[in-house]
Length: 221
Length: 147
Image 1 (tube, rainbow over the protein chains, first blue to last red):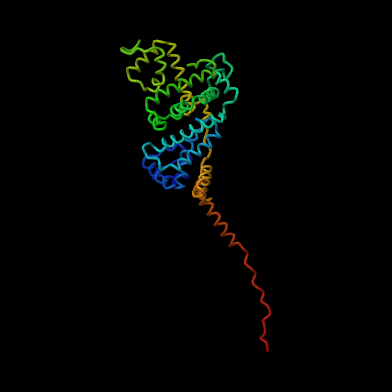
Image 2: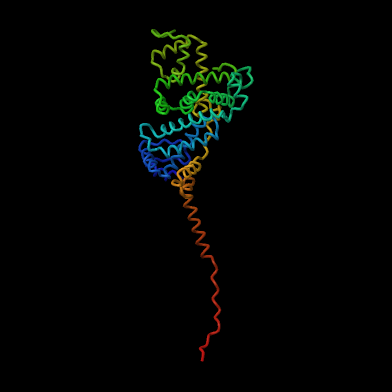
């Protein structure tokens, strides 16, 4: 029902009602940026609705906590509202938004680390201690591949992801969960291409180690 | 089975797993890794386990080959707009999102708002016209002029 008004607002680009996976063409994006710079509240409402799923997904994966993610996602949009004038248009609006979100996540992770209250939703004390100390999260299975199905695998990966250093986690989330290209990751992180590749390799290796520690065995094929 | 001119140790191949998976290697190194994996079953097993991990991540993201793997971190976002509007209103000292209507406009489609307004007008109209007419005043005694 919103699509007609949104299409007018975005210079003709039609959004499916309720669809958050929005991909604006360049012209529509520029029109949106112009209105955002004028602090057009209707345009900002649309912008939040269009991008909130992407931002929340990224932040949730970075922080692991739904409550923290909800709070921080709102802060990301407030930062965009305030600092849209600093968007030069070198990258796409969505990429710039990711950059803002990643920077917020880094700061929040540091803050939470200082408070030692990094409470991942799915990470209970016992399993967290087990992963940190290298012990198995689950009882060692007779056949390791049997444990790597469904919910268990998802939980093990999520826990392992939460134990990565912030820099490694950022790269794995951006590349392997958000599916961004190396070019986009370079823009978001401000790292050179070679650095992104080498750090991503180390991040994946660290993730693999964390998963194997969690499983108490080697990853099966 | 190493490619001519490029020989890689097992550790070097492990270091290239990520780039090999992402097809980021030069043709020569790509061929060297492929040959090394073909020649070493244990190394090949490690590489396949590495790929399995990345496939599982992709499945968590919702675009991988294993739809049975749940995506616990890909939860649907709550509606953030109302919270963002409240914070902006407060922090801007009331400059933005100052009135209830602008906030409501972001939450409800315009068609619904228009329908509600129309409905309110219709109810008001019928409310006014449905009032029973006042009875005609009973004529009192005709005043007589004083003599």
